Amino acid sequence: MTKQPRIRVMVVDDHPVLRSGLTRLLGLEPDISVVAEASSGKQAVAEWKASRPDVALVDLLMPVLDGAETIARIRGIDPAARTLVLSSSESAMDAARVERAGACGYLTKESDAADIAAAIREVHAGRTKVRRGCLRGPVCAADMLTARESVVLALLRKGASNARIGEALAISELTVKTHVRSMMDKLQASDRTALVARAFDLGLLKAGDR
Image 1 (cartoon, rainbow, N blue to C red):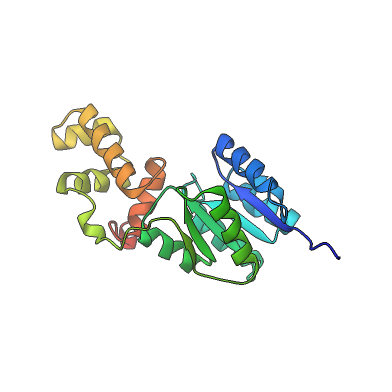
Image 2: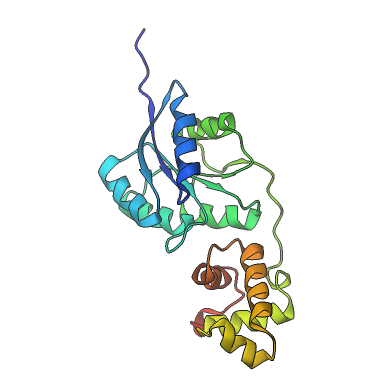
């Protein structure tokens, strides 16, 4: 009997332990081979050009280029590229955003190895809108931040330091840090730059204010 070719996969994640774990687990599947790894969106685009995998498994929350932007750039190279997002975010809003960027599916990191492998097979077979995990329904973006957090965000967008924000609002620098951390958790942002970018994506900051 003729042996079926393996599905060639690229794993993209900025966390080396998670990336290597995914690579090892997928390597145990009889029909999947990890042919490339990338630790950033920029590297993922370069690896896509070099390796041309069948499916890319891409982390959503990465600095500089997040998963959605990475996928958009890969599809700019190859409009038929098949990509699957793996994220710690359970937000249906995030799932919709990456699908608009061209992803074929969305998995939360609650998914086990069998679910991830099954989703890779589905995407490789041509299915789109593949989802795994418990996704929360859409939330009104305006309700995500408190009034004080929104003010801190506006000052953060202007490049103000924590100390300057504290002076402007008559609060301590530690309180500013607490507000920033809270917003990063709520918006699933990995750093201050990603926080501002995420706020623009959700309409919490207006494009005309950039």
